[in-house]
Picture 1 (cartoon, rainbow, N blue to C red):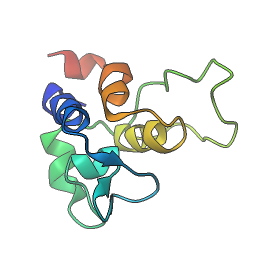
Picture 2 (picture 1 turned 180 degrees about the horizontal axis):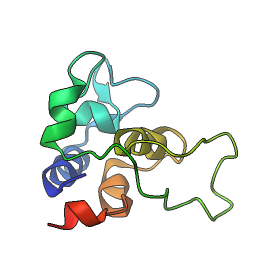
Picture 3 (picture 1 turned 60 degrees about the vertical axis):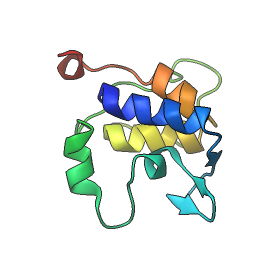
Length: 107
């Protein structure tokens, strides 16, 4: 995930966007992927725009007691954003701050 995506998540947090789980958009709320414009149909171009990789770095909570057993790996970076939003209840700001950086995203 690139810096542009992180900035959009921070902006959503600062603007008080209501965060939801399990869906991209729900009335006035959005999940982290919904903030980035993802929906059921337009994901490929946004994956490229935000530099989402096909294989995600490890979840930052994988070795802690905060991790749920039901999560299956490996997953994509897009799935990791959803995982952090839905399974770990991270705010938009925390997702932007805690999302592991891949070597490719560091420039």
